[in-house]
Each structure stands twice: as C-alpha cells, then as structure tokens.
Length: 201
Length: 201
Image (cartoon, rainbow over all chains, first blue to last red; front, side):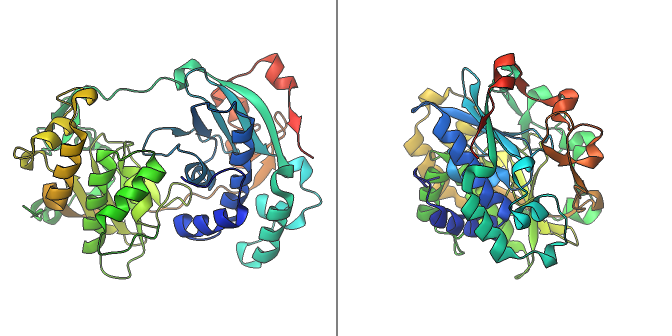
C-alpha cells in the first residue's frame, strides 16, 4: 500500500478504519511493529512477511508493505503469538518483531486488552488507542531471524485442467477430480443449489 | 474498503496496483466476481467470505468488501478453484461465483492466461486486461450455496498466558509452551539470533 516512511500514524488509523472496518487496537499497534521491522531491513531489500497470528496483524502487514495474501508474499503461520517477521525473500534473513508482555505493566489499558483481562464492552477504547499511540514501538522486541529454506520456496500450481465432476479448472496435481469434489467443500450441497446455476452469458 | 457499487473498474484497477503491487489479471477479474456475488445478496446482509484459492482472489475480496484476513471475515479454503463465496455470516446462505472455463473460447488471451498455455513473458498484458474489462462478469457462473455450520463458528482463543520458554504471550489452550516453542517455528534459531535481542525501552 502507499503509506510511506516516516510512519504517519493518523493517516494509518484512517486507512485501517476503511480497510479493516474499525480502528482495531491490534491493527494499530501492528502498524508500529511492521514499521519497526521494515526500518531494520537494508534499504532496497525485497522482502516477504510471516505473520504468527491470524488476528489483526495480517492487515497491518498488508496495509504497510507490498506483501498481501493474494500475491503470496504474506504467509500466516499461526503460532498464536502476536508477532511478525519481514525477511529477504531470497536469502531468508530479516527481523522478527513481537509485543513484549514484560514491558506492559505501566500501560494498564494495553495490558488488559492484550491479555483479555476485561470484557470488550468494558474497555476504554479512547484510552487504549491513546496509550498505543503514545507507546508506539517501545513495547516491541525485535531480533534477527533466518527463515528455514522450505518456507522460501514458491509453490508451483503446475498444469491446470478441468474437473470432470464440477467442470471447473483446478491444478492437475490435486488428483483425478478437484479437492472440492474430493469432499473438502465447505458447502452443504442441496439438490436445489446443484440445479440452480444462473448464467450470465 | 471504500469502493462503492456501481463497480468502477478504473478506480478499482488503480487500487489493485497500489495494494497488490501490480495489475494482476486475477485480481482484476476477481473484482467482477466479488461484485457479482455482492449484488446478489439481500441488501443489508452482513456477510463473510470464503475464497477457494490462495491466488489473487483474497485481494479482490479484501479490497471490495469489509472482509479481511485480519478481521477474520475471509476464510481461505484452498480447493485450487478460482472461486469465492459471500454468505450471511449467521445463516450461512449466500452465493458462490466461479470462472466458467466453458465460456472462454472466444477470449483467447484470457483462456491462455487462465490455463497457463503460454509463459508469462509471452502474455500480451494489454490485450489480456482489455479482454477482462470487456467480458466483465460474463465469464462467471454463480449459484446459491449454504456454508456448513462448522465453518460459521468463530473460534475463541481463550485465556492468554506467557510462554515459559520464549516469554511471549500465547493462548493457554495450545499447551504448556507456545506452538513456536513446540517446534512449529519457521525460523532457524542460531546462537547469535537468540542472544541478539534488541530492546527499545
């Protein structure tokens, strides 16, 4: 996305609201995290991202870098940790940034939000966002990492063929029929839905 | 994101370039797909999304709806099919849109791109994008779906605790130590990286 360094938090908050749907504290604090990791890379490094949680951070990465889910440059490896890394996409070296729980004692609202110590309805969102903006990246820890070679490979989809069952295109390497027709579909198939294919030709 | 109906393809192409990094044909055609699915939902429906591929379509969904990876409203269920669905996030009913290979014969550049019939370097990108804009949603098929109840549940992370090994926060339900410390980390840990933790306090 197009938010440049130096990090403009107010502009970022605005974009978060529009993209994520609301000013989620995790995406806001994630902005500081992404920015810190980015600043530590050598200028001009073409980098990819790993996100260690499914929550909030993927959006911070997507909004502040050119790594998106759809271009394959963010990998979510769900370790349940509020952390991310940016790394040279060929060599695998880079930086990992995490939120350090040991630094949170002075920031009551952040600590209570991060450890879910009170229900969402009781959170003081104004105070929480003010604390996040004030602390900036001081709650972060950062250390160098090297990504394992198997995570650097780009998976090839190979030959694309038509599934004899659903008549849609799929990667031939998936088998005789596509994975949807192998039973991995998330939908309940009803006779009505099978018949009721609308066409727009 | 903030691109409203009716679908403004030129504005969308501009946003795709900024977010995804380039005018990827799959994200552009995905815009028509998302828009078609959206238009078929009852007005005011609060919907989530399923994306059946990791490639390109997640970005179209994220740019044209309020469903993002970080807010948990897009699920990628990789079936290898170029298809997506938008569905009522409580009832599970909605619409699935796919690209119909049987309609591609008249659109040589789209067909060759979609089935990877020639190397990327030989693609005529101008012609491909022109064909995508001209065909719009006529290459799409659409049908009603109902999402299985197990995919409608929102997973709770539960209690957050500190990992005795890495000292970071993680969901207690993951076990005695976090999943990273259980060996699922994508990083090579070197003595240097363990020692070299920079702090910003």
